Length: 86
Image (cartoon, rainbow, N blue to C red; front, side, top):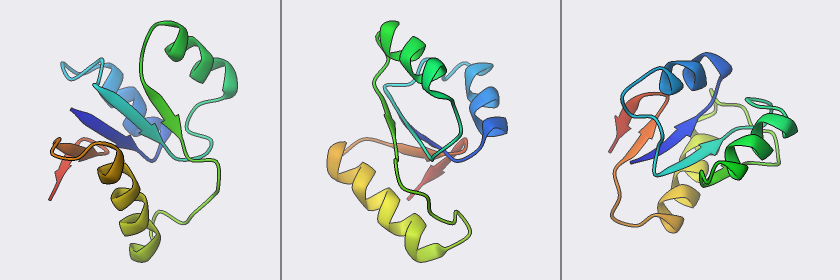
């Protein structure tokens, strides 16, 4: 499963769930700091963090982010903050 996380709270819920570790993890800016990102990568997780800021309440920005993730993971189920995205 591919997970797109937009907040620290959503990240912590994912870590505590049976879905951890994800097949791939995508994060918006500032969900995790650089040390946390490096630690996940050292443990073998595939982690991608968006480097530019966007407003998660902006439907167009979110659609663009989801399209980018889908381009990298075609055919996989995508979850955003714990919910499947269709």
